[in-house]
Amino acid sequence: MTSEPHPVPRRDTIPEDLLPIARERTWARLIQASYLRGEFVLSSGRTSTHYIDKYRFETRPDLLRDIARLLARALPEETTRLAGPALGGVPLATAVALETGIPFVIVRPEAKSYATARLIEGPMEQGDRVVVIEDVVTTGAQAVRAARALEDVGGRVLLILAVVDRHEGGAAGVLAAGYRFQALYTLGEGRVPGA
Image (cartoon, rainbow, N blue to C red; front, side, top):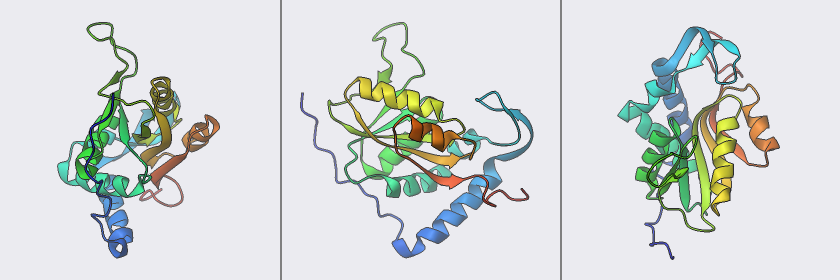
């Protein structure tokens, strides 16, 4: 089965000279919308005094669009498919697909037990060059599971691309699993207001 031709991806909707300003403004808005203080149990089981509530930035169309534009600029040129792990990666993959014209798939945490019983929703072509788009990475385990599922159906994972790396071992976990990793933003390094 041959894939239909895709439109030429757009990755340059932010002019190069405005990119640093766009990155900083988007980060400030993301933090304002979604940075919470308190006591939170993370997906890793650890507790934290701060949390980035991804749904607070993924459900705001203005902020989601600007994040998608930044993610689109980070895609390798040879990308032919995007993948969004459910649940948080789905709106991001959708937004980047709309920005670039690159098709996407959704990776379920486990195969559904009815109908098609698929783990991956949407068409995948053998040899697709895939970028997994994640929201907030703590350990990287969910992104790695998604990448392996994509490889199991013949995809070639080019990159795991996150919006935020919590700087708690996720990048190292992804790299140790054999995948490239990049994040738009990393917590720590003075990037969190008042931290």
